[in-house]
Image (cartoon, rainbow, N blue to C red):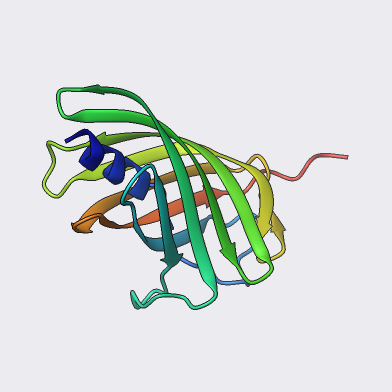
Length: 151
């Protein structure tokens, strides 16, 4: 049960590829699918059609914090890469194994990196995912880019 719990929470941290033309203030939405057989997850970004986005990757390492009543709290570090774009997030999440299907939600921030030439360090991250089969999860991350600094 604990292993299953860890798998779910790791999966909730993933993402859909946003268009490169997004404005500086527009939120970035990134869809993903990943496999989480242990305390790490690996996967790919998804196109809007649901097909894997070639040349992309999602890598997640998670740490369980607490487990009670079918709900797991965890922290995670996740890196999203596509071509020359890459960023790393620090996340806190809650996985609810009482839900059908299992669901997880996360909140956190980008600790370093950029996406499609947009700097994201300090950006707010929110996301959710659900188990689609076995140890595989599919979800969406929404990133609110940081505001430009005033001169």
